Length: 234
Image (tube, rainbow, N blue to C red):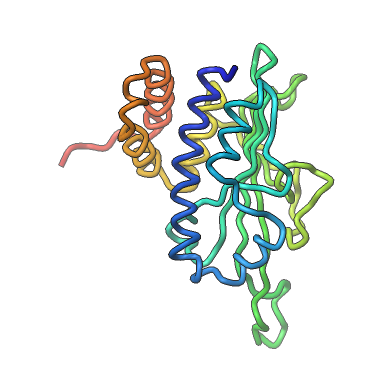
């Protein structure tokens, strides 16, 4: 049976999945080339796929290695394709979760030609994994790191940029996996993106009536929104 936090993760991921689905249907032409490359490797996770994996798959699981949740890309990256792959394990006292965010975009050749003549752009991938604390004393905190894959380290995306997959490791101000996922949302869309998730979540009458689930979501969202620096009233 899914835990309350698993149910909360499902609610947030489903809202993000729906927004991404709408983007793929109506606005993906702005990122035609990256879209084609991303879909050459991954297909879109459906609503039923997400329910079966996170809600009915037990305490431990992960997305199919060939499926991701496609996101609506951040406002300044409309020519890119964004996606998320997830794993989770709630069989431990401290749940172990990983959210792998990837971005495909059209980039100029590197290094730049000496004559300054820019050749045709190529699709490149860059990823970031947001993870719960690891065993030991080094990365035993909520953190994010660059990565070259959507999940398995030995399964790199072919067009991944040759960046370090170990450093830097940024500490993330989260206390559980739900807050970690919402920090990822804030990293992409800012705090307004987190507020937008809240609005979409609580349009659901059944969710509003579920006291435990609503409390978990409200508490986590309030925690992430509190990271914003206080602004003075006009």
